[in-house]
Each structure stands twice: as C-alpha cells, then as structure tokens.
Figure 1 (tube, one colour):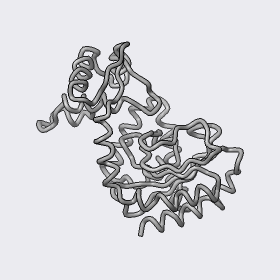
Figure 2 (cartoon, one colour):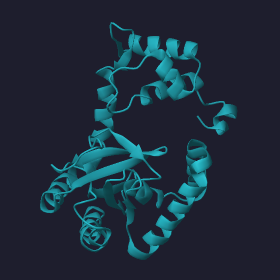
Figure 3 (cartoon, one colour):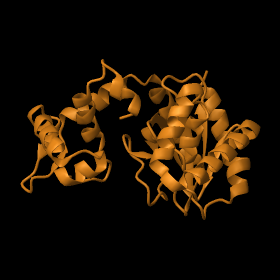
Figure 4 (cartoon, one colour):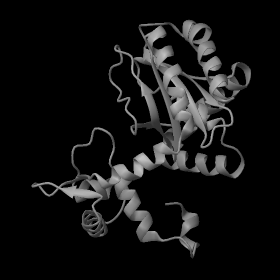
Length: 251
C-alpha cells in the first residue's frame, strides 16, 4: 500500500491487506504458511492469521494438513472474469502461435501489475527453459523487455509513482536500474522496441513492443535462449517481425 492511502477516507485497509495476501502467492508456490505470508506482505503475523482465516471461510484459500495455505478455486472465477474482458488476447493468440512456430521462440502478451508484468497469453517454444511462461505468472518490470515496453507508456504522475515503487523495491540498486530504464527509453525512441539481453536471466534474450491503443495497456514479447541468436539477429530479424505484429494487433 502507498503512503497516499493513509489519509484516504474511502480506502479500506483491511480489504487491501486481504488482497495483498492473495497476491503474495506466485506461480510455482505450493503452499505458504502465515509466517511466509507475513514476510512477503510485510504485515504482522497476527494480522495475516486473521486474514487467512477469513479468506478460507470465503473460499479463496484452502488449508492443508500442515496448516499451510494455497489459493482455492474461488480465485479462478476472478481470474477468468478478468481474462474474459481482454478482447485483444483472443485476437493475438493465432498470430502469436504462428510467430512462435516460425521462429522457434516464445511469444507472450502481458499487462502491468504494479512493479511486475503478468502474462495474459503465452505461446511457449519447445526450447524454453528456466522461466515459467504460463498465463497468470509474472516477471519483474524493470529488468525485462516486456516490462520496459510497458514502462514506455507510463507518463506523468503515474510514472513518478511507478518510479517510487521501483526505487523502494530495488533499494541501493535503484540508480543502476534507473539508468538502464533511461537507456531503454532512448533506444525505444530510436528503434520502437525494448530489449533485455541477459539482464533478467543470464541465458535469456528478449525483445518487446507496446501495443498502441490497447486497453488495458499491453505489450508483446519474444524471448529465447541466448545461444539461439546473437543480439544483432534479435534487433534486425526478430524485432521487425514483432513490430509488425504489434501494429497488426493495434489496429
């Protein structure tokens, strides 16, 4: 929660904390206890215990025999409702699959969620290793090509708020990431796409393009193992195809 919410009379803190607990579960988590959730949410364990109890009673969490929690089926209804409202996702599926098959690379569509990017459509290449590419999984915004492509569309007060959140998260490492984002912005102005060559994962290269006019704002990404193509090939061969696809989807 942001400091600005402290004096907001309409802001319901208890609800926000409950949603933070749900958001603390990431793809790949099996089950989390109250201690782990308290650490992730930076909340007192006693508060988290009450929240997990309430979420279990409402059907959003389930508790196993060890006393740990995992998201329950009721959470799926919220996710499916959100996905159903993304018309672009449906239109993008076939051309994304075609690009993935022709290049042997993974193609993903994502939206910004705070300081992360959530995948809403994925076409995985068979060579893809190391990173989960499933609908609903997420990656950091600052270090990924798709995150930087979405960052390009954030302006004004929203950009300032996002930078503040990224700085808080990165701590002493923020000046370095801020410089990388600034360099990415200069590159984007010249070439129309963003890149990340081994910055998120050392063996993963990626390029990404924002989709003009998409609501909510979306970006499309192409990624693969570093050994497949050198940086020049990503810039000169893959990026133009991704730009063409983004233009097609943005019509």
